[in-house]
Amino acid sequence: MHPAASQDVPERAAGFPDDLTLLVNDYLAQLRFAREPGVSGLQEAMHYSLLAPGKRVRPVLALATARAIGHDPREVLPLAAALELIHTFTLVHDDLPALDDDDLRRGQPTAHVRFGEDVAILAADALFAEAFRLVLSEQRGEPAHVLAALAALTDATGVNGLAGGQYIDVRGLAGARSVGLRCLHRLKTGALMRASVESVLLVHGFKGVALDEFRKFADELGLLFQIVDDILDVTADASELGKDTGTDARHGKVTYVSRFGLPWAQSLAEQTHAAARAALARAVPDGAAELEAITDFFLDRTS
Amino acid sequence: MHPAASQDVPERAAGFPDDLTLLVNDYLAQLRFAREPGVSGLQEAMHYSLLAPGKRVRPVLALATARAIGHDPREVLPLAAALELIHTFTLVHDDLPALDDDDLRRGQPTAHVRFGEDVAILAADALFAEAFRLVLSEQRGEPAHVLAALAALTDATGVNGLAGGQYIDVRGLAGARSVGLRCLHRLKTGALMRASVESVLLVHGFKGVALDEFRKFADELGLLFQIVDDILDVTADASELGKDTGTDARHGKVTYVSRFGLPWAQSLAEQTHAAARAALARAVPDGAAELEAITDFFLDRTS
Image 1 (cartoon, rainbow over the protein chains, first blue to last red):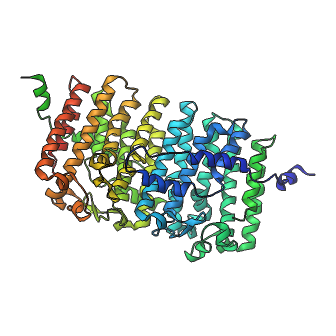
Image 2: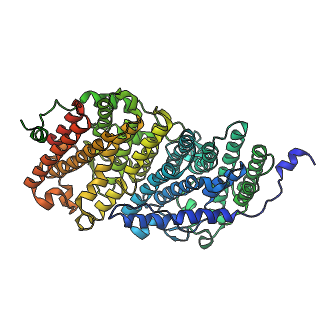
Image 3: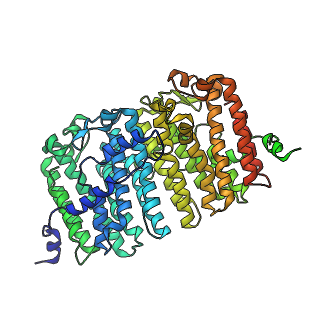
């Protein structure tokens, strides 16, 4: 078989590494934030959104990356958990009436429905701050490496990351020729996915050519996740997905499906999956079973 | 004169160090956040709130602290600016209709009035992220010291800082015996004021007994600022203050004035001012002209 062809059609790996999800969930469940009297209600709202059931794809991606470079995943649990806190922060704000106005998330009422808009806004802000606090107080590593990992996190969350991506989304700028869908998703989804891989490599002081291959892998993975997200918004049902469906069409959003049609979006998802697996094979020539499984799951997921 | 008496009734120092305000304003004005196409509008909203006229008390406090321990204030400009980004982030969220619902801030329409709620929420989120990014990319110092300074910033912004304080405020918990006004203000105002002093000391690796005296100084200073804020909400007029007045009464908030009356609040402000000056004198026995001037300004300010 031609080597390139073997990369283009990789063998499917085992299922999603649920053992890593359990590790993350156990770690998240024991997090306590409130020290002061009077703020336990805020912590309750934070836990409500943070501990709602989920695959924890970003933290699991981080733990799997640690294992792919020969480290014990538990060493980066604070960093991995911080990714989930940041992700949850953005979900809570994105769901607000002034933004996407969603009522259902992870199979339960959204934070503002449950606690009111004021508490939802503040709980999300607090999750964001506590994400950094968690890394600063719990993540081991050489100080310069921890700083580099934090820089990757902040790159992914600011103007050129999550906040910017959501801005492009709510202002409907992805349809503009100068911006485009790819930019929207690189910021809104891709940035944090990339940080999930990159921050773990940086906190371990990992350098060299393979770092760039890991970045390429993470970028393709983020794109894959978003394309499949767009597909699921029209093909899945809300009870399975755990959030409202058809919201993209309701908000008149440009998506891979609305722009190019479902068959093309599905084909693009497959190409992106192959590109991610190829980059991963270059980053870890000996194979990285869990990262391969995550990549396959991103293509095959139904929720 | 009795030494204690000389501490209790300190001589008034020169005026507010406006030269440091200029330094901060010049630094803030040259900050650019947007790299990606499509997010320049988000940057515009960030600049709108960030660059609105202000004394920049937190960054100036940081720069004055640097000078008080013998350093060039310009060395900590990224850290000082980050404090203003974080402060602005909280102002924009606090002003939202779901929270304090204020229309006027720093003499101009609030961010959500000017740009809409969606953009205001995201611009504030982005300011928060970019604050950390600024420190991580621009602040010089030993990596372990930069990490310690960042920890001080995050302590001040999370559940046990700004977000928690605002939660206590909007939920009206400050009237509860178990929480109290002092807790509200330690979190909502005091935490970031303390971080403005503490983070500068930490980034310079400053240690020893004086660190605790600086912390006591900063805590009294934060309390003083808030008591005077409560006083100004009933005594100042909106055009001078640059924000709505009477908002505390309108929201039925417990303040030092509503709880104890104006004369008592004014007396407490004077006592707190004296305590701050006394702690400062212990922290810097040779004197720190700018920090003294800031402390006096906090008592005497009319806006």
